[in-house]
Length: 163
Image (tube, rainbow, N blue to C red; front, side, top):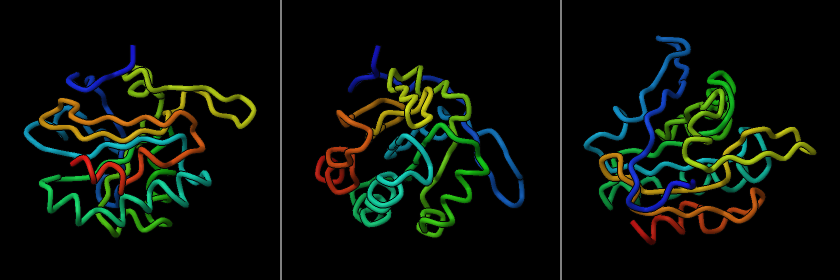
């Protein structure tokens, strides 16, 4: 079953990487408890639409979300934390303050019912492209693209209009 507006986010352990801690676990429920956040997911780091459209849309709209009471913006992808760190650096997401977290084994994607597989491009158990606003771990707004190559309803500007 796919997560929906009004549902609580599932418990999940995601992975991050930083110079001080190296790779480390990030508890999703701790990250969202008592906070209003944007959570967006995408098929994979360094892929064309994710790099050229999706991540930049949230870098551009970060200040607008802050003005609307969003505490943080979190990107998740089924990649490892080393890749997510390198991608955050190369896209400017790290400098912008976006949190780029890895769902290493795709457990969160599956638990949310937002996973898909596309063997011709080597995607197995990846996130569908989505964006949501979460308030104290409860989904308030959710937009999921029909195709992983599209970034319209899940982009930063589209979500900001609903914040």
